Image (cartoon, rainbow, N blue to C red; front, side, top):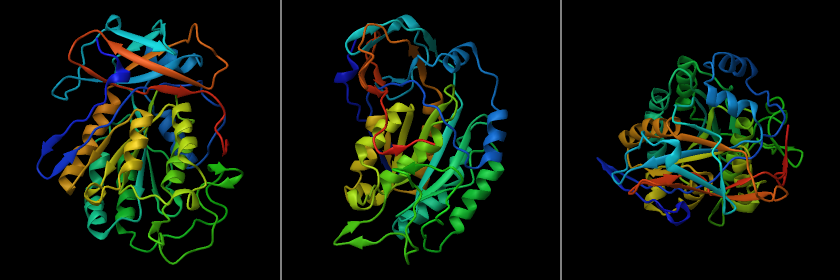
Amino acid sequence: MKSLRKIAVAAIAVLPGFVAYVAAQTGGQPAPATGSLQSGSSQTAQSQSSAPPPSEARAKITVNSNLVILPVTVKDRSGNLVPDLQRNEFRVFEDNVEQKIDVFTAEAFPLSMIILLDNDLKQKDGEQVRKSLDAVVGGLSLDDEAFICRFDEFFHPGTGFTTDHDLLLTELQRTKLDTEPSVAPSSGGIANGPSINGHSAIGDAPNIASATMSIRGQSTKALDDAVFGASQLLRDRSRNRRKLILLISDGANGGKKSNKMNYDSVVKTLLHDNIEVYSVAVASAFLERKFNRLVDYAHDSGGEVYFAAKRETLEELYSRISEEARNQYTIAYVPRGTDRSADVHSVEVRVKREGLTIKTRDKYYSGEIPGATRQ
């Protein structure tokens, strides 16, 4: 039996032309916040109404808001998913107090995915990404829903969540054909969109001549604000769906001067709303060692990060990420014997079987999100 807090997973998968780096640890799920986000309302209604009938385990998760939900990935020494573990092989600890597992299932959960595309990549990276994007849809099942967003100096949401693969492919095609420099969205933004300190999270600055600028060598790209904006779009998706952000980027970030949100606040939002980030770093991110933000978001949210050197690698990774996120174990429990007045709680998951590694989050956050105005 191995303690998850002592496990850091670094795997190198050798496929033609790419190196995949995986960083993961443990974490958790707070009680859901209330509210509604109405972006892309018609497609949102369509995807919600077409969701499959929930199983008993998913129904319990939906009804009981006191449950802490832990998506858990278990792999063997070869990096393969382990599908045959039973409830009695897991142990869960919150703040070092062992918890009773109230819900356990190995069933595949449908995905609610934000496809978050870096709109300001180098020409070679951008071309590889554009050619690979159709494969993102190929990795989705009929029950999964996706929402395409882009970012540069601003966050640019697409048309909303949909389960219609043809619509997703059409929107991705528009993304590939969009060669004009990006500018700030209009001051109105999307209806009831995410906001930060009362201001739109998708940009309210005047139009600029290029997607991002460089000031004394520092990028003005707003990666932190983009991840926050994506999390706001995901926060009200059903608790019985797996919520994740597929972040495809070179990792460049403009820091405090370019972002309204700071990193710690964004991570608290992800942990609060049970959202995992799966980062895919383009080739230059690995070569130039500018991928720290991508690693950090994946690590701290319970997701993973991969590096890809060519288009074929990107296509392979999209499928792998979707499969892994959909087929995690789900463990849920009502906290017992811990201080419920605390905002942050540590979580540790252990497995009795030898030779396995576990990926989930190492904490969850139940307090108010600093600097975020909830809709």
